Image (cartoon, rainbow, N blue to C red):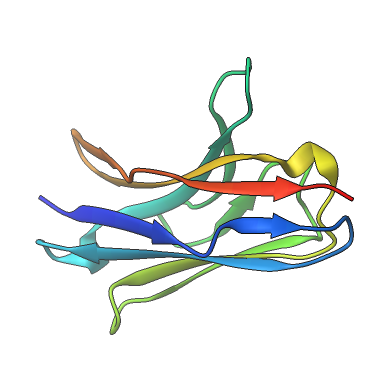
Length: 115
């Protein structure tokens, strides 16, 4: 089973950018469908971006045009490039890997957007 470790979170001003990374180990990374979710205080965890089963990127409406998901199978890593960040993007961001009944989460990384 794959293990996931996120990095790249931090504090940034509105309009700024961050790139999150999710490093996977322990299994065949390329088999997994990968995605990013986030959870703000007092809210449910929500999908931010993912690769669908055919490899097509899918984004939440709130981040379309600002965030980009990508993956490097040679490095066993998935990325989330976040541009034009807004205060409402503040949340803990989680990496997720799915393969049939296997559903794995990383530990999360905090993103804070504030002036």
